[in-house]
Structure formats: C-alpha cells, structure tokens
Length: 416
Image (cartoon, rainbow, N blue to C red; front, side, top):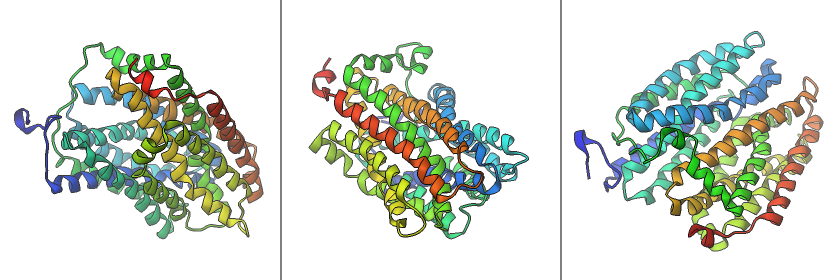
C-alpha cells in the first residue's frame, strides 16, 4: 500500500533489485563514515600528544547514543521525514567533520572533544534512521535486510583498508575522509524512498522516551541477568575500541587501519550464520562463547608483542566476529524473542543499546582512561601487555557469573 504523496507504508512489497542496491549504498556510506575515524582515533590522539583525552573522546559516543537517540529519534518519529532528517544531519555533520582535524592538537584538545560530542549527537540517530528507511522500504520482504545491512560492515572494512593503505592511520585527516563521505551521503539521502514516520503508540511521549514498557521486561529474571551481563561485558568492549589501535601501532604494525579491518571481516563471516546458530544451539551457549571470546582476545593482546608473538595480536583482532556476533547479535535476537509478545520490540532494542553502547561503554571508556593514565607518556609494548590483563580478567568474571546465574526460559517467558 502507498500512502498519500507517494510515501511508502509498512506493508508495501517492493520487488525491485534497484531498491536493494540503493539501500545497500546507503548502509555502505553510513558505516564507512564511522569506520573512517573511529578505528584509529586512539592512535591519532596518542601520536599528536593528547592520549590523556582518549577516554573522553571515546565517551562521547555512549553519551550521544543516549542523548541523540532520545531527542532526535523521537523528533524523527513524530515530526520529520526520516530521509530529510538524514539529509540535514549528514550535511551538518560533514561540516563539523571538516573542522575537527584543525582541533586535534595539544592546544585545542578539549575543544576537539566537545565538537566531537556535538558531531556524534548528530550522527548516532542516523544509524537508526538508516535501519528504519531500509526496513520500511522493504515492507513485508524484511528477509532482504540482513543482506543490505552487511554492506554497512563492508563500508566499515573499506574505510579501514583505505585509511591504512593511504598511510593515514595516525593522521587527523581521517576526519577529512569521513567528512567527504558524510556530505555525499547527505546529498544521496535526498533520493531515498520517502517512508512514513512511525505511528504514535497509545501512550505518552514520556513513557515512550523512557522505554517504560521495555524496562518492565526485566521483571523476568533471565532477561534481567542478560541485561546486567550485557552492560558489564560492554565495559571491557570499550577498551578495545579506544586503545587497540594505539597498542597495535606500538607493536610495530604500520597498517593499523587495515589490521583492524580484519575484525570486521570476521564479523561479516559470522553475521549470516547467526540465525541458524541461534536456532541450533539456543541463546545461552552463544552468549557464553561470546563472553569467553572477549577474555581470550584480551589475553592474546596481553601476550602479543612486536616479535615472535605478533600472531597473538592478529588472532586477537580476528576474534572480533565471535566476540561481537556471538554476544551482541545473538543478544539482539534474544531481546526480540522476549519483547515481541509484548509488542515493545523497538523499545527493548533501544533499551539494550542504552545499557550496552550507552552505560557500559561510557563506564568502560572512563575506566580505560584511568588504566591508561597509569602508563608512561610513551607506552611500550610491555606496558600495554600489563594493561590488557585487566579487561581479560573482567570478561572472564562476567562469563563465569553468566554461566552460573542465567537460565534460558525464553519459551515460557515469551508467553508470560
């Protein structure tokens, strides 16, 4: 069905391969922008002498995921066309990205962090908006979405490879690359399908913004334990995003961006198999393997160096597919299983994001900053190795707690 003025509604069933290509390009650029600067930002900041601000720089994403998603997400759902908001946010965000390289200096480090926060408040809502446009454009054919979303991971990989091959892994010009693509995506978004905004639920805006119905799901013991463990495991996760690039550079690997892209290649390989693995093994084994993989990854970093143990660093990066997909993708599927019978899937997924990419990663960024502050001004590989044991032990403890306390009661609770 098509609404007035050519707006696509949720039950339309487009069959055009051209639409799939257009939406794939959307996802590719959406995550290329983020991957271009996020992967090696820690290395850049350490190189220019503002490594003490890495924790703050990587705290802006969690803060923005909370503030931006609530404020701009609700505005998009009620008052603005999703595609037009994409146009505005990416064009304005592109301008901010062009300014950022000039502030990556010891003299302007604090200003850099504040402007990065402003940019991320604009960027984070566009991730959800891109998903919304794709899902509503496909209508009933949501089975096409995983294929399209995979191009987002490909965009992240391509960004890392290009940054690495261009020798920009340690350069503030990573933001210039991201800015050019952001402007391009802003212009491209004007050509996207004009899907209609969400119909308001029969509840107040405050209840929707605060995800009251989704929080009620935590009355189920297993879901409460899952949310708690997801938040805790996100703390060591934040340390990977913030400090892995600086560590890899210290170990003597020159193509840091390309090396980090190995993790996204691994993620892509596991992504399509996740629904089958979930049906085959259930939620607990997958979540547990994901947690254990985080502990193993950091242990590998703790023994890796620039000599004979260099293989441990590459293997630790390659484990990203298991770390991310087995926990976060499986966790999203589990959350949908719990939330769908209550009709609050979108709220529950938003709440999961709030606790993981919001609360957990904010805590992880700050705790990582405290640990990094204990290192010398120019850390050696041995200094980094000592630091990585902390998240390794933390992830192992979370895995043990999860194994002891979590019981998969999905079938019974889904009907509760």
